[in-house]
Length: 231
Image (cartoon, rainbow, N blue to C red; front, side):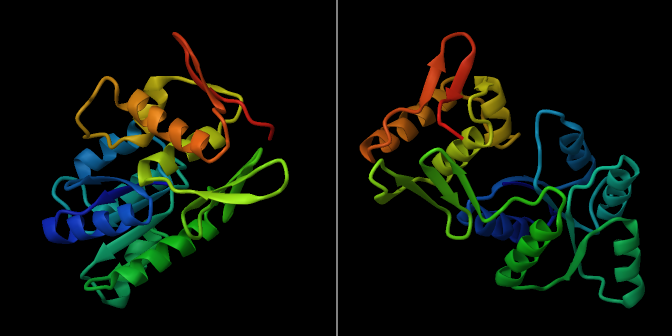
């Protein structure tokens, strides 16, 4: 699950990103609205949720919402603001925000509101994703392998390994290029490292093999990778 966070307060932005990352969200954090719109226009990147501060340098969070809805983009948006007057809340919701959170707030409430947005969203994903003998459980961020006898074993994965396996399980039996994986699973502003995808693939494959799952992700030289599991 990828989130675009647009917050110009450094301490708050860092705290939100840290909290979301711990929950296995992939977070792109920018500090002005103009840069945020460039991220939203990037066709390589698909976001699950967006968090906009109302008052931003460049383009405001309110204007970002209006642009999204003008372009028929259904991306769920949580608006953060110190404005707590009723007319401000109405203005934010009328601009296209799906929910409204007044500062200061607790991280537990932020996470609960994001979960609620996901449930209501047309982009909603179920609590579990099962492909072949692998199951991702989004409720507790775990991966379980079921062998031929029905015995289940949890596979310990890092955040990035979880995101990588999730991406392949959402595209089973499809050829996925290295560039597609890098663009979708690494932050836009991350330092480009030529072998970062291959390195993560080695780690993921090792853990899958050690859990008895074998090597379901094959390398197609010159093309990319493909997950070969029976859906």
